[in-house]
Amino acid sequence: MVKPHRIWSLIVVLLLTIATQFLHVDSASASITDWLEEQRFITSVWKIVNRSYVDDTFNHQDWYKVRKQYAGRKFNSRDETYDAIQEMLESLGDPFTRLLRPKQYKSIMTSTSGALTGVGLQIAVDPETRDLVVVAPIEGSPADRAGLLSHDRIMKVNDLPLDGLSLDECANLLRGEIGTEVKLSVARSVLPSTEATLAVDAPEIPESAFELKSKSTNKQKLNQAKNSSATNKQSNQAEQEKNFDVTIVRERIEVNPVIAKLNREQGHKVGYVRLNQFNGNAAAEMKSAIANLEKKGADRYVLDLRGNPGGLLTAGVEIARQWLSKGAIVYTADRNGIQESFTAKGKALTEDPMVVLINGGTASASEILAGALHDNGRATLVGTHTFGKALIQSLVNLGDGSGIALTIAKYETPNHTDINKVGIDPDVEFPLNVPITRDQLGTKDDPQYVAALEVLKQQEQQQLADAA
Image (cartoon, rainbow, N blue to C red):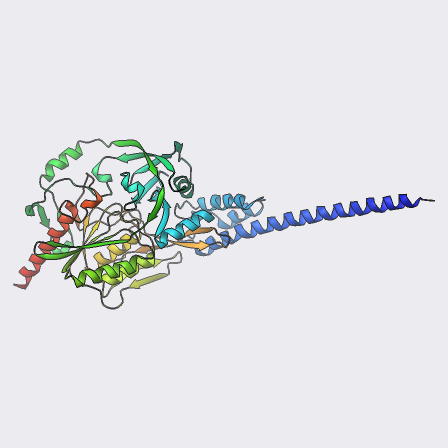
């Protein structure tokens, strides 16, 4: 006969065994649930890319095979899934298509609204060299005050080489708390051909230094005095690189997209408008600036897009409509070749003559605006060729605070010119090689601005001659 206490012992052991088995089942169930959730998450990103990415060859790879490659992997955390997504997107070979982890996504959404925290650099990865390249420093930012220029290459951050790092990994190294320092190791070309920011080569520009080409070419060429000697000097130069370190203190950066003033030049009232970025406030501020200048009697305009890295496509289109009464603004095309056109609507805020200043830091939405004004015959372009970014990205919220920047289309100017990696050539070419300060912009100490005034003057003289 089995004693009662032994029976109870057996029952307790049995119950504990059953409970332990249930714990193992619950744990396994939770593990499976987590695995399925991470698989659903990475698959959702794959589907977004599969549905909308601009290149239907996916960088000449089997995108379904890529899906299978990640379907069999186990991710123990969301961070591991993020790493896999980043790896998957990098296989596209497109530096503009990338994962944005929660902090990165929030930062980008904040920057397009007009405020951000950091050193104030617009950056990109060169698709050929994989170097981190400065598109443009934000005006008045710590990076701007430190003297960083468009097309500078950042080789190290806090002595850490950037080789092999993605754009977002590089951006993370630049970000940090307000008041903290970051050291940048910079490589800069010293040749004028690589300049992308404001500079001066001659202190004065005599009227005889301008040479206008025939109308049939729709081109103008501006030659500096003593141009031939300067050219000979440049031709004897070997390409050189200047390497230096700079320490920058991070801070909160308020982006003022539009700065405008009225200048009295050569008996005219010139509205000088500098557009720094196409953020969510840009169109409204541009509209206000033009209205104020019109009230003050502006009769000609210089629109400064130098060093403007772009921003929101919608802002670029809306601002173009403020200067154009009719005509196409930009054509976009997705991977299926389906085109969408954006056109001018209604009457322009002003029809006064205008010149647009451009350079190598003029990119993306800035090139859309410059191309629209140029191809519609609304403005003459003065400066140097632009950056050459004709790809359109969409920011996709992934639902957990993260997102992806996805290249969904490319654009062409109204004349159906594809400027990607090429840029837009100015009508009046004016290469510069000695930087000037921000305070000199739009003044007589800004040779490109002076060149713009001379172009406006010659256009007026030509109109008078044609009317005679």
